[in-house]
Length: 139
Image 1 (tube, one colour):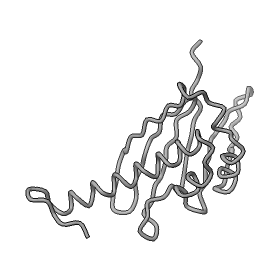
Image 2 (spheres, helix red, strand yellow):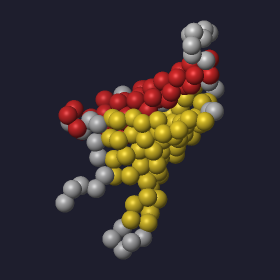
Image 3 (cartoon, rainbow, N blue to C red):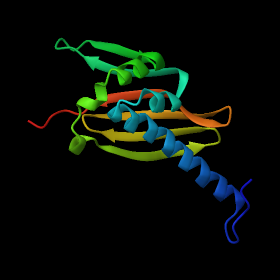
Image 4 (cartoon, rainbow, N blue to C red):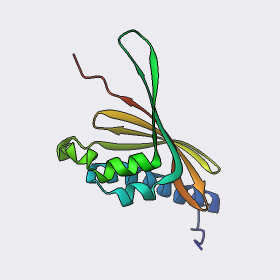
């Protein structure tokens, strides 16, 4: 049990601990992807994760692409993220909001941006949803 620090309320300390755990889940997800560490990625995910992206074809029609936790873990194990050169492995994590047992996080990565929904599930912060978008190359 964490004792309150003089001058800091216990709510503040609890929030700081939650934010550290949320950041850890986000970093396990993105760094694990780049490293090809499927165990680390899986540790950050809720088993029913939904990772989605909407893509628009040349005719302007939208298509929803979806990935499960299992598919993401398998793609990590196959080394998909290891193809990104070390100098391009961007992993900027911004916690956008935390309320009770829910949080929103943005990760700016090498070629995409991930918006994560993170939940406290059985006492552990895990990613339950990811909405992502590819960065458009400069023209």
